[in-house]
Image 1 (cartoon, rainbow, N blue to C red):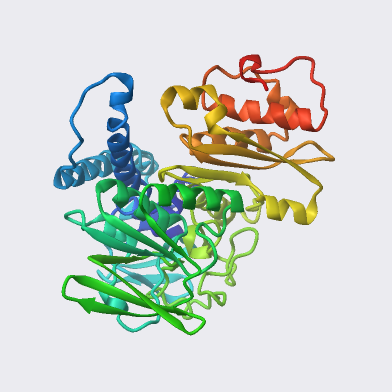
Image 2 (cartoon, rainbow, N blue to C red):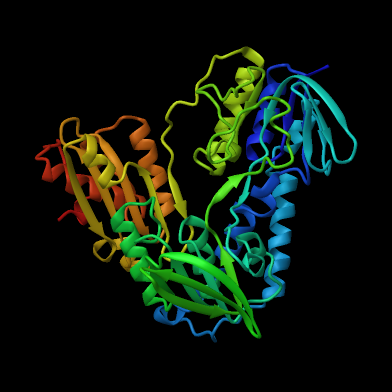
Length: 471
């Protein structure tokens, strides 16, 4: 019998298989499609490649400011898609941990189709594989949520948007969370006329309110039509040139039309074909697999990791989940998921990112001080011509620790990685302020914001970091 069977070969599944084999378990990895899962074929890898193309277009339009004469950049979308495929294949060949998986003797079954439980130790796949294991780790990921409204079949998912063969003249993007704003930002740069819709009062509702407001303002400046608080979506209709969405709020009906409608209204667990009830594995009211702090399900020998649990549905968190679940499957309940510091960001224009608590959440439990450093006052952003944005720090007045860091603007995602390390290390804000980070850099913006916060809190360091930037 197999020691550990891992279902799903995305980031969580790959790490689970690698960890289990590292610990000496006889391990089998089975996946519906290709090794690498959505992250390689439909998630961060192709999305970031398209986002990079959008960045290059924006950078090319800046060249004349630096005395470099070029014509207006023209997008060859078919060639871009070729590049996306090249990148995906390259990542799969060199950066997907497949060589390590193979070297450890993990048996990998690709293109096995949907797996389903036939009892709590056995699965069967669509291709006829039957596998029995002492321990099972479910890593089947998630998929876009469908809206229960008439005409939904006339819409597309974000996955469809990434696989378009040409850039549509116009696009409705319904749902302004992380996925929706990425679709909107990328295709706006590519030349689509974008209308972005959010049923609630603000886009990016899980972000700090200042971030939501800044990104919405930047989108509007870039000619994206941002519609917030639209109310309820009632239906979609086919039109001669595309699709129409009908919505209403307080009894007042509205509509919008475009060539294409992309719905990015959330993420659900991909468990429909698993027959979890057969294995007596429980799900919560949202359909995600219930797990405890050890990622153990309602059946003690079955674990779940990654998006299927409905926690932070991001690649780094899925990787950690896979490691924890496999460790506990092999060694018993020795590790917990804990509450790791988790930087989160998106490669939109402008970028936005965060780590830690929002200001609203911080004020619920702490006495806080905030400081905001605008990008139009920092040297590197002025040099690079990227002056839109800010870095915001939220500080606990009692401990002087950093509770949250929120950034909008160029290299926001990279800045928050540094802040994440600072928070994880338990550094005080004045400790950060005294690190002589290189000048002029984007990371240095974080140190300058820390210095500003330290002054507000009257924390007297032995010397002032970044004196050229000090205010």
